[in-house]
Image 1 (cartoon, helix red, strand yellow):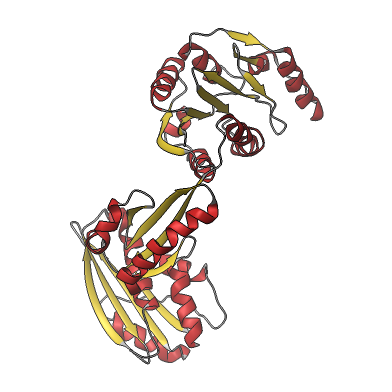
Image 2 (cartoon, one colour):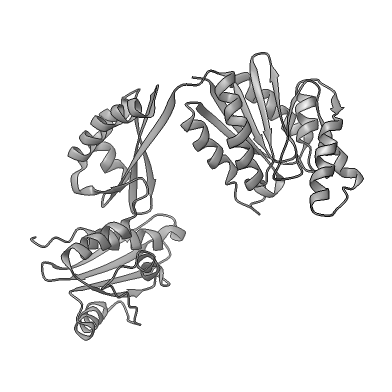
Length: 382
């Protein structure tokens, strides 16, 4: 399988003014096509630094995909940077200029002189018409490698990736394989505890198994390379079965499943409603539950101190007639966060205090995930 790198171009990304969603979209598309992705990078709108990044990528990868920097302004330097990286001149393409002119004409406008920059590409490049925008893309092959330059506007990038670039890559590299991934979501254990249970599986080569820790949950990713999706899924299946055997109830779902969804599904199966008291979470727990609203559910929030959290849960449960009472109170401190959890139900009553020493900004997410994990572990028979 060929290898690829992604280079996103734009000072606004480096400054944190916008989020880079293009790299994720391209990465998923490359994975689906069976192309290995080993590096991604972001560089600002500087011709020299972009050229240096391009040269570095071409030393490592078969394919380089760039996004951004193809507009008409002075700070859109991708075309010139590619030309500099390969010591090529830029050349004007009349057909590209006509495409730009026709695109503007559809909106009753006339392009300005600086739009002519978009009709230049490095010498020898294959120009790619952009029917959904004004910035043409291009492909340049050099010493067995391919540089694919796409616009930075997500809608334009996605269209050209699907309709032009992926078909080119499939033909150019005779792609027949695929890379598939399956993500199992766990809660209730830290990353080191999960690793202790499945560490030997993390040494496999195909499929591979890896961990990704989040506040209050850990994802286990299984990735397989194969000639077809069916073969990749066949490789993943026994590994997933073994992971489920070892991790058991710690797994609450896979891929797009959410922790709140798992909790509410179980409660729906039991036919129970819940009353929720949350303190110090700024409504985040209620928002998570509301995003997965099901019939028969109420998510309530009342003002309560941490000292009378248990009493507040009892009172709210009695007042609403809910089978479940859940109380979550987060006490914030200088060095640690203290979480109080109260659960009341026909099968279980418990009060738990936990501490969190991680980044304060993640304390709320951690607290909400622990509360939802406690909720989804309820069983009709304890």
